[in-house]
Image (cartoon, rainbow over all chains, first blue to last red; front, side, top):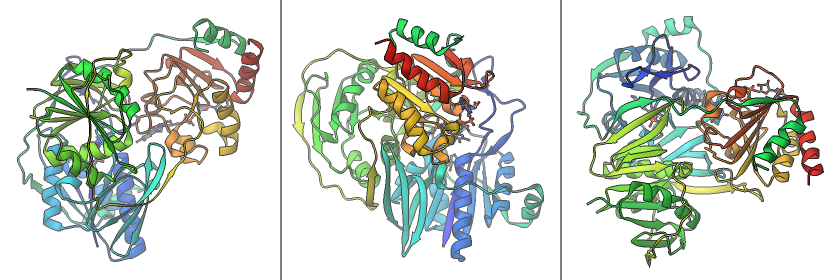
Length: 245
Length: 299
Ligand SMILES: Cc1cc2nc3c(=O)[nH]c(=O)nc-3n(C[C@H](O)[C@H](O)[C@H](O)COP(=O)(O)OP(=O)(O)OC[C@H]3O[C@@H](n4cnc5c(N)ncnc54)[C@H](O)[C@@H]3O)c2cc1C
Ligand SMILES: Nc1ncnc2c1ncn2[C@@H]1O[C@H](COP(=O)(O)O)[C@@H](O)[C@H]1O
C-alpha cells in the first residue's frame, strides 16, 4: 500500500507574531519553523500503519521554498520512505496547492492520502477537501482514529456535537485532528541517519492561478485592560453591576 | 450580477446567517438542508430540504455543486461540518475560498483571523465564484426582513463515504457556539467526574454551556466537542468564565469575541490575566463553590 502525506512548513505555533510595520506580511524574524503540527500527526499515523501492516510505502511531499527540506528530512527520520520537494517562490493559495498535489497523486496513485486538517499558519482547513474533490476520492476529515479494513479504512472523526465512524474504500483521503496520536520525538542523530533516504526536488507541474490573495495583515483589535478582583464577593458584585449574571 | 447562495444545515443557522447576507449587501437565496426556515429572512427564494441524516461530504458537495450556477458567492456558518463540505465544494467548482470570515470590506474583500487569531488577514478574492464560511458573531442581526418565495427541494444523494455509526452527545445545556454564558475548565480538573461536578454545576447555575481546553480534552477530562480554541469551537458569549486555564494563544483564539472574560487561576502570573476583564487569583476548587454560594445569597 502507498500512503501520500502532504506536509507544510509553518512558523512554530508557540511563537508570538506581529504584522510587519507596513502591513505587507507577518514579521517572522527570529522565529523557528516546524512541520505543521497536524501534518506531523499525519506522518506519525502513516508510520504506525507501516509498522503494523508491513507492506506500506510512505511518500511525503511539500510545496514551498527550498528550506522545506528541513521538515521533509524530519519526516524521513520519523519513518517516511521518500520525500518530494516541489520548489516554488509563489505564495500559493489552497486551490493551487491542491491542484499540484492532485498531479502528484495522479503520478503515484496512493491508496491513502493522509494529511493535516489545517495548517496552523493560514488556518484555512481547505486543501484536504479540495484535493479529495479534484481526485474524486471520498474523504474523512477531523480523524481521531484510523483502522485499515479489507479494501479501505474505517475512520472515527470528530464532529460538532460528538463523533461518527465512516467507512471509505481505497483510494481515499483522510485529514488528521489532534487526538489521532501523539507524534514520536526524533533526536538529531535520527535526522542525520535519515539523510541517506531519497529526497527528490522538482519544479511545480501545474502553473498556479491564484483565486485569493492577502492584500495586507493587521493586528487584531486589542481588548481593554482588565482588573484583578480581591474576592469572590467582589467578582460577583462586578458581574451583577454589568448585568452579566 | 452578484448573488449569494446561503447554505444552512438547519433553520437556526439560516437565522444566524442574515446579518452576514445583509453585510455583504447583495441579493440572496437560501438552501436549508434539513428543515423549514422562517419566511421573513429577506431572501429572494428559500429552498427547504429534508436531508436527515445529512449525507457525508462527497455526495453532499456533489449535490451542492449542481446548485451553484448563477451565484457569485456561496456561504455557510463556520462549523466543522461546513468546513468539511464547503471546501470540497470549492474544489469541485474551482472556486476560491475564504474560511472564517469575521468582517466584510467589499463583496471581494474579507477579513479573517490567521495564526491562531494573532493576526487578521485582509483577503481579496480573484475568482468568479467564491466559497465562504463566516462567524455569525461578527454579523449580528436582530431585525426581520421581507418574505421569501418558499420552495421545497428534494434530491437523491449518494455518497462514496459510508456512515457506519454516529454518537451525538449534546444534552440539556445550550449550544456552546451560541450560548450567552460559557464556563470552561482546563487541565487541573483531574477527571471527567470532577469536571462535570465543578464546571458543569456552575454552568447550570448560570444556564450556560460548558467548554474545555485542548489539555482537558486530550486527557479525557472533557469530550472533544467541548474544545474551545483555534482548532476547536469559537465562542462569543456575553460572559466567559475560564477556570484553571493558562491562556494559550490557541485557546484565546476561540474566546476573543466574548463580551466579558473572567479568569480564575491560582497563578497570579498566568497569561490569561492579560486578557481577562476580571481576574481572580484563587484555587478554583474554593472559588467556584464560593461563587455558587454568592449567587444563591444574592437572589
Ligand atoms: C496545533 C495546536 C492546536 C491547539 N488547539 C487548541 C485549541 O483549540 N484549544 C485549546 O484550548 N488549546 C489548543 N492547543 C493547546 C494549547 O497550546 C495549550 O496547551 C492548552 O490550551 C493548555 O490548556 P490548559 O490551559 O487547560 O492547561 P495549562 O496550560 O496546563 O494550564 C493550566 C492552568 O491551570 C492553573 N491551575 C492549576 N491548578 C489550579 C487550581 N486548583 N485552581 C486554579 N487554577 C489552577 C495553572 O496555574 C495553569 O495556568 C493547541 C495546540 C497546538 C499546538
Ligand atoms: N504547501 C503545501 N505543501 C504540501 N502540503 C500542504 C501545503 N499547504 C497545505 N498543505 C496540506 O494541506 C493541509 C491543510 O492546509 P490548509 O488548507 O492550508 O489549512 C495541511 O495540513 C497540509 O497537509
